[in-house]
Image 1 (cartoon, rainbow, N blue to C red):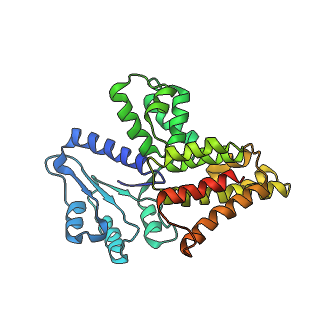
Image 2: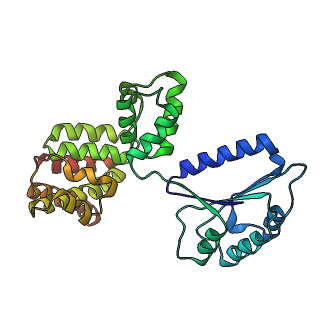
Length: 308
């Protein structure tokens, strides 16, 4: 049998492959397991030998192939040709993320394989996946906050949970607040929330905390990027667009919550703030700033905030 593991979540497919490996080794031994991780540079003779040869002493063999997006056409054709002659008891799993479904290779591979999808589309999916493993070990509010802090990244969420479980039997919201550092994107969301509600001093304090962990230029670029989205949202709201229309126009998807955020800052105020921030970069590039040291850039950002 052939299987295609396809996904938008690398964590889920990695977890599934680990389980397959573990169960297969337990039943058929690791001698009959092959995992090919560099398909771009694969030796086709080795591939052919692994797929076509019978298992040693046992009933089955398992061959796992990580498919690269840059796979050459000759390798794709060779894989398909080899599969036609495969020993029926050999199992082949293709780890194939975000495939181009227009390609001949994908269309032909699907005809002879069973597809298993491993997707996490939103925070609801993430929460369901984590609860299926740890619902008795983490408080609901703590899980919501952790998902938010780690920007819905399953791999990072599980890594943080593993670290916390070393010292905690049960995780509460305060454990997340005291031990987990939010991702830069989430931290910037928090700053923008403060700015949208004209909490200028609080936003400056939050930025100082972020800059203990992050280069100011990375922070500045991410702030501009996320602020631009909020600027478009306010502009559309000024044009009397409904939340659903804004979601579609800006293609917000899992950031749809941004269209519902409360806001004390007007479109005009936010636009002027954004322009002032952009001018920092312009002044740096034209030599109009005294210095481009991190402290000086922070001072310029601070001045922009206080002008709101």
